[in-house]
Image (cartoon, rainbow, N blue to C red; front, top):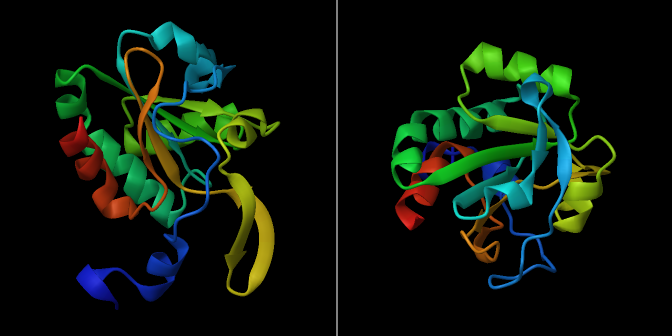
Length: 169
């Protein structure tokens, strides 16, 4: 085990990626299919802080830790007027199972065609166990009430991340 009980593999996977979007940029708008069959348009959340977090895959160890962290801090995030939206390339059906299994109180949206992950610059080359492939990097954007990106976390430790975001709002 590495520092703070985090395995070396998880630490290596948490390396920052280079993003084209920066704090101060207007967050790219999108409309996508969400859990429970909802249609979600980012710009409809203007007036609220939006935590838009990108994750690789439903019901995998790191993604489950991160989602459950947001679940466990959800009341505090709501008290601060924040909306939580998770994004992965998994289908809505997988999102619905993930939400039910872990009692997630927030929306997950499906980006099967990779338009959102590419617009936010979080789709790219990844390496796992020596194998290179294209996938979603674990990155979180805090979008302010005006639609501008206030903060970006490009290095995320899943088990600690939600508390860090709550503190930043």
